[in-house]
Amino acid sequence: MLDPLDLAKRLIAAPSVTPATGAVFAELEAMLAPLGFAVHRFARGEGPEGSEEAPVENLFAVRAGPPGSKHFAFAGHLDVVPPGEGWASDPFEPLVRGELLHGRGAVDMKGAIAAMVAAVAEVPAETGTISFIITGDEEGPALHGTRALIDYMAAEGHQPDLCLVGEPTSVNRLGDMVKIGRRGSVNIFIDVAGTQGHVAYPHLADNPLPKLVAILAELDALTLDTGTKWFQPSNLEITDINVGNRAHNVIPAAGAARISIRFNDLHTGKSLSDRVCAIAEKHGGRARPVISGEPFLTEPGVFSKLVSAVVEAETGVAPELSTTGGTSDARFLRAVCPVIEFGLCNATMHKRDEAVAIPDLAVLARIYARIALGGLALQTTEE
Image (cartoon, rainbow, N blue to C red):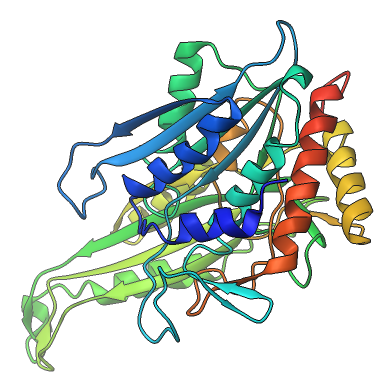
């Protein structure tokens, strides 16, 4: 087997703060091409640097199996969050200290992609079709990443039967959690207009803040649900209140707030947005929703049984099937085929001195190889 540690080092050494382009994709292409993969790279987005429309690079690589064979896809992202300050070493110079590999992306998720590459080297081409769906826009707005890859796959006639996303799902040790779904996400921006004036003459002004407070109080008092069999309760959080009033004797002209809702499959982004908009309008405000993703569930079945059995065989841990956590690009890929997420321990993702346990990389590569082989051999993909 290829050494996933060496592969991870190569990927970490190519800086790729979101939106990622260039060198890190060239590195992955150089890994996959010798293994028989046809690699297609393309960019989407035409906006200025720093904008949501900034160019993003994507990669789709495929190694075709015999006609009529099944198609198993690995998916993930090469972009990383900014490293921030205070690292003990350069975040883009992979450093081994003891049994840990340090570097931005070691866990989320260049280590997993390295394990995927090492894994497919062990899967014979005649077993079936293998592909990589890799974006440079998962940590950012996710406008021109996996969604663009899905469009490309549809146009080119690539239809995976199963997909495994390598997000860091493990919590306390490798193998303890597999994600079979995710909650939906909607951010809602609330604005209330008023009339500026002197605090001593309130009758000549219209204070927007009591209206804003009333909106937020009603929203904060909501109980959206108590959860379902596979999903935790939906939660609404007030994430920002902004007035911008620097004077103590001025009634402000406007107030604004932002809320974020993570919701289960009892709701849709639209149903929740309509509810918030109605509450805002009742108190004289206006709400603007931005839906990031809808909830989804890959019902437990042959695919999840395969993943769980392989993980337990390699780690000795029976994984918990879960839908907890934030969103991922699985929310887009679930429209293509059944999708499950499994990867490294997430304790240091997005943190300073991010690190992966080196032994976990080798185990994960073996797990991915066995899942791919098993997935290609399944008689059905019905979930």
